[in-house]
Amino acid sequence: MTRLSECSKRELSEMLADTGIVLDIGAASIRVRSDSPALAQALGTVYGEFPVLDHDAFCEVSASILRVGGARRYFHPQVDFEVDGYRPFEPFPADTHLPLFEWGVNWTLAERFNHCLLLHAGVVEKLGVAIVLPAIPGSGKSTLTAALMLSGYRLLSDEFGVVRFDDGALLPMLKGAALKNASIDVIQARFPRARLGPSFPKTRKGTVAHLSPNAASVTRRHEPALPGLVVFPLYQAGVETVLETMGRSQAFSKLVVNSFNYEIAGPAGFAAACRLIDECDCHRLIYSDLDSAIATIDRLTASVAERRG
Amino acid sequence: MERAWTIAAPGETRLHFFSDGCAVFNPIRWETHVIDLLVGTLMEALLEGPKSIPELVAIALDASDLPIQEGALFVDATLVQLSGLDLVA
Image 1 (cartoon, helix red, strand yellow):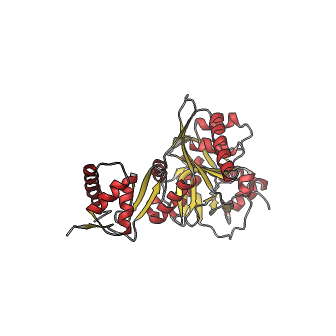
Image 2: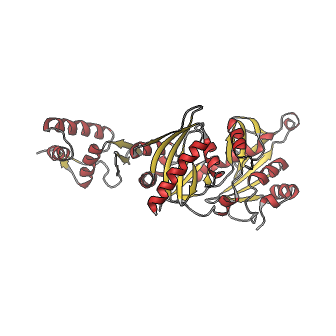
Image 3: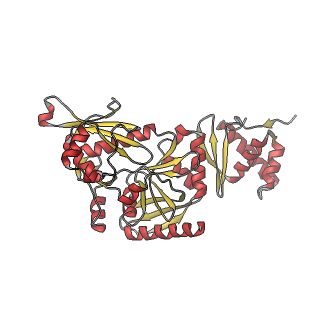
């Protein structure tokens, strides 16, 4: 099957402007249309390992990134995010097309994806053990999640922990991992072969660049994973790595705070969160050194895998 | 006759025990509370059916090292708190 990275810039631009590009990200599919050739090129890089799909495939989200018309486009060009005919945000500067697409789609998924418990968490998997990394913004979650993928873990998501209600399995929601500010240089320096999309300076979150999900993660994007670890990461410059075991009730409290739809889900969300905590070892990881943090998670993962046999 | 305490919404209330505490889904307020294990034990007893205060005190004493006097005070205080949260009535 043809991958997006195998398409020419012109093919991507035409597809994006005409029928749209369909991204099957695992738990959902997204159709994106746009008249921005720069967005086509960025999608081709960040989603390069994703297959080119039929444009008429069912999609949970149909989004457009459209250049704003009028005289303003000559001196201050902007783009709008539109989903199913609705424009939930004010326009963004035209040169922040990919961040607007990513944030808009994340917002839409967070609003709609209520048939699963949706955690604000990175999720990776190795040795059959899924590691959930819930955190508030600024905790170093995306950086650590990206580093784990680049160190041999399967990436399920850097933003959404998707917990299926009926069996507690974690579903992939595979998108570009949004790295911000210093994290971009940290990842590029530590993993020179990491495939990053363009950098977007001066966004509302500073400079943003998106790490491309690797081929192994994309190939397995329909494969659920069994949770085994919940690790709450916290980046603190200059500290030695600290790993603390957390009591389950405390971990439960912190987990549900890091959910998009726990309150909407009611008893189903409660049951899913309790089950997830019961099935996982729960820790707090304070780190500044990526290699040390990865080694710590490697040990935890191997320990759970060994216990499971 | 001794008043019997009961769970306010027994069919919809959810109680889950962890090793270090309990989580309760409160269907009346649509909220979640994390409570200690002894309070969870009282909630569990009430989920099985209405209980009088002496019955609850006996359950609390059985599940803890509390002396009788403190066990009775603990049950009284717990029921006040749980009723304030609309969990028991």
